[in-house]
Image 1 (cartoon, rainbow, N blue to C red):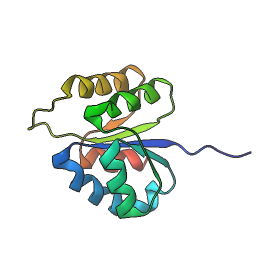
Image 2 (cartoon, one colour):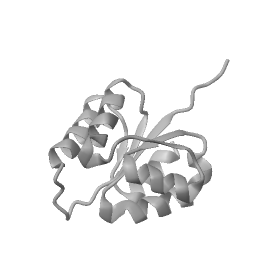
Image 3 (spheres, rainbow, N blue to C red):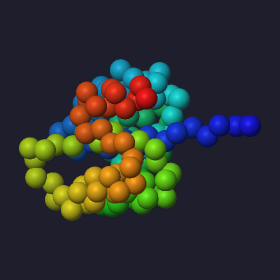
Image 4 (spheres, one colour):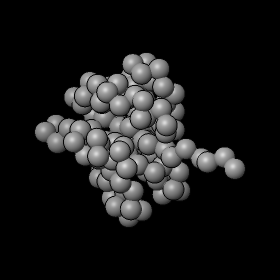
Length: 123
């Protein structure tokens, strides 16, 4: 019987993309045990830096946050690492709030900083 890999979504605002890439590099061996997806540029940057396959959705402001939220509601995503920038106004802020809301509604673990992300992938 084949066990399906759990899926982690990776999302990072512009000012946090460098942090996401560094975090993914530091945890590459653990992340290799998961199916990975992410919003546009974040997915591309993580894939290029780590060599891991990362399914890319649209960029967050173009609907990627909503695509990932839809996958969460379908229970296709098991965990989310979302390095958001709380000090920068986001043009797609309602989408960000919707993503956070859907994680709570469907009881999906979501890490919004490096310390919590470290705990999340060790689960």
